[in-house]
Image 1 (cartoon, one colour):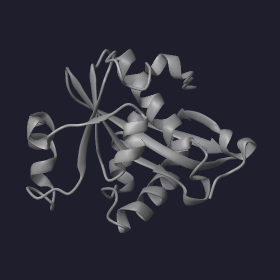
Image 2 (cartoon, rainbow, N blue to C red):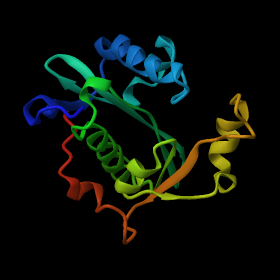
Image 3 (tube, rainbow, N blue to C red):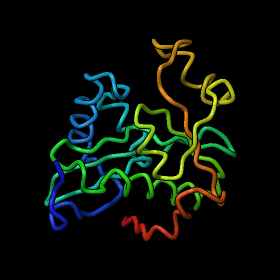
Length: 177
């Protein structure tokens, strides 16, 4: 269900400790469906600076984080939009914010492991073979219950590559502190 333009705007900002319970609850709903990895309150607190949220009228309606895997690769993680806020562009805003953040950090490639191939393709990502992602495999995948038979799709966004959905800076993303 699409939300109204006015309602979907919200404020995209860095997450704070006051957002942690809302982040955990939003991620839990998707983790229970097997769509995201579960996150505990403590695990969110430990990496809180990596999270961005979209706050609509005082309620967290979207969340995403960025994990640096190496000098040349970051990963978009924990991307979730509340069911009642889907269809209003919040997911795309969150992805664009993380692409802009990765660009600011001069990380040339951003990874997403996803079941939402069409969404990430619209954001400028393309499919890659998982076995080429050594940094990810040896950091995280090896400890996953789905390893080595992962059913997620590996997709990469390459900064400055023609065919990607514009540069993150061109997306008009303004991440407020």
